[in-house]
Length: 235
Ligand SMILES: N[C@@H](CCC(=O)N[C@@H](CS)C(=O)NCC(=O)O)C(=O)O
Image (cartoon, rainbow, N blue to C red; front, side, top):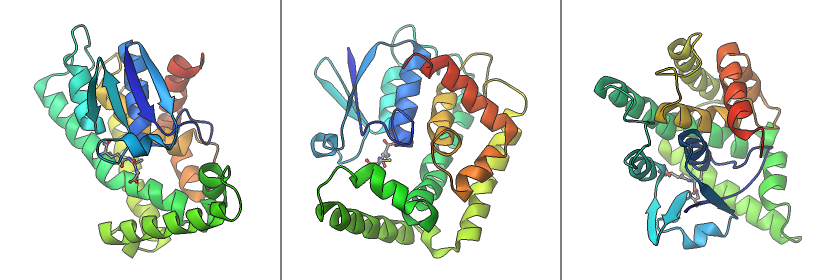
């Protein structure tokens, strides 16, 4: 049995991390049996200090890219093998663009934008006793702000970050067009990666400008709703 280590439910999603959610939805799409262990203290046991990681029969794999590689190679799993070499190459590059660019927009929208900060603080630190809740939240927010600045996105104004955010949404919307899934008739590894990220904006119980922008893309909105209905309506 595969165990997926993540953070846990937040904002109405099974996991507030896009990296954890992409593995969760992949496992559902591929029909692989798994269980979830969801707590922020999983970070302490995470081999690379980040989530997700999975464990199967004593074997631990961390980082969503390595996890996908491992799962794609399982007998009977066609999430990647059904793609042509060209589709696989495109899927990899699109997924990496989400990991390395879109992700920072999500961090900004949750941790830095004043519209969402009180909600984020409550979701992630609300269970800590006073004054730890305030101190830890302020410390983590400072670290995230520093990371976003060092990465580069944090040097832009909020309207510019929204512009960068829309470059990705425009591209995804054009690529999806009126299809049900990005590549083929059935979901592929790319759909798991895209859903993991888009759901954080489109399906999360969060009202802010970033989410409002994402929800304006009707085909992307419908795409998230369909996948959610198909794979999460029983959870
Ligand atoms: N490259 C990693 C990135 C995972 C990642 O950044 N996870 C974040 C949550 S979204 C994390 O664990 N952050 C905790 C930390 O940096 O302390 C992957 O693809 O799995």
